[in-house]
Amino acid sequence: MLYSLISGDINQEDYIRYYDIQIIERKLPKNVHGLCFNKHNINFIVVNSCLGEKNKKETLLHEFAHIELHHLEKVFFNTKIKDIEDEADNYIKEILWNIK
Image (tube, rainbow, N blue to C red; front, side, top):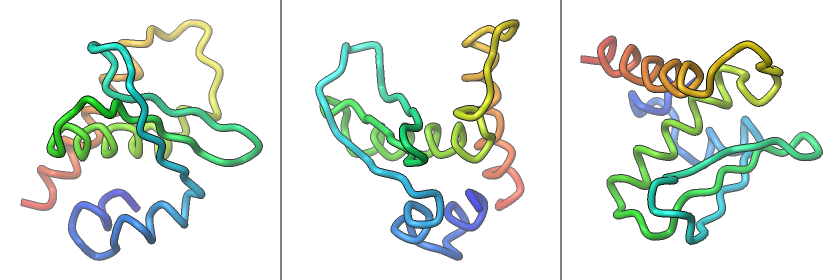
């Protein structure tokens, strides 16, 4: 589904509706671009309001990847946060590579 969003086959509103996502902008610490979590079967994405538009879009894509990769549904006892973050980044890179 993220492939369809990035390739322009669907728009962001359709993507958000499909995954039941609520996007919130808040001032976060400088080193935190965004985060996501699920509460009562609603996916929430919080984006740092201090970011520029390009960084906000990149952050949204990254958080969308977490949702699509089911990271919010898994319990990661033996997985490092960096590994999860890398998986989301690599997923987006793979999609972008396949679109070109």
